[in-house]
Image (cartoon, rainbow, N blue to C red; front, side, top):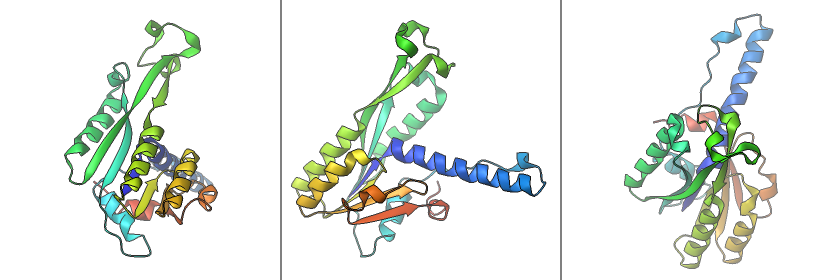
Length: 211
């Protein structure tokens, strides 16, 4: 089974492509060319293809039983942000896919410096910050409970969040195999003693998973 921490993965992928963009701009500038012609690319992925392509990276043959996506739902205030609303609508649509489950956490807007909620302006990010609630706990509960019920032999956790290290130790104690998947730029060294394998995804991989 594949367990995806959507926000951790999404932020890591954005950071990876942002670095590629900055590196390319610097390279073009050093060559004396116009760096404004460099285009920032953060490809949209097909989350049906993504799990299947990850499975192909494993050393031994595996059969994917189910993919579980853990993602925060924006609160009513954050839903006014068209980008957040669009991403949430796409995530919600993934519920219709076969062998795919979406588990929601929450994104909650909070006013800066303890000001009144009425001071928040969706068009001015400096007036609020966003708290994520539930994703880590939801993923941990689901992966451990399903391990106890022998729903899988191998847990593939798509996240570079070290908060999951105790979860991985529990899975190892239950005799399950644990594979950690991250995005290039994430340091998975801390997972070495808590998982059986670590996989890094890069642009060549993502090009196989485009929508």
